Length: 154
Image (cartoon, rainbow, N blue to C red):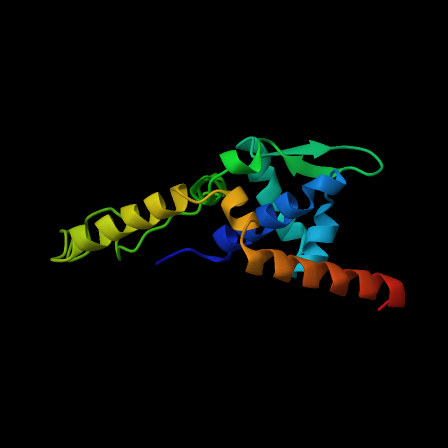
């Protein structure tokens, strides 16, 4: 499966944003600190997420990003698609030229698997992930770690 860091980071950042949206706009630097994703990479991802209207930017002091629509209306496949990440398990990137310019024996199997993965991710919303107890526990731990870093200055 070719789900690279771009898709993984976009989903992680969007989940972080959704978990912290109740505090107002969330800065990319806060997401970067909590998730260990470079700020410049987040800026690139959020430009694509903004074009897909999954997030809105808020300018000025206290600005940052908020969700473009309710978290129950944002599905993981939408996030992956928004950052131009393909979920493709074929060797040929769905071109059908896997074996000397022709389809290989298992092309349809891998193509169907890619479709199944996309459909699976289309059925999971950010809200579904937010409700998971382990996701909440991890988020709370990250928040405490970030608060400790801010308080100790290291």
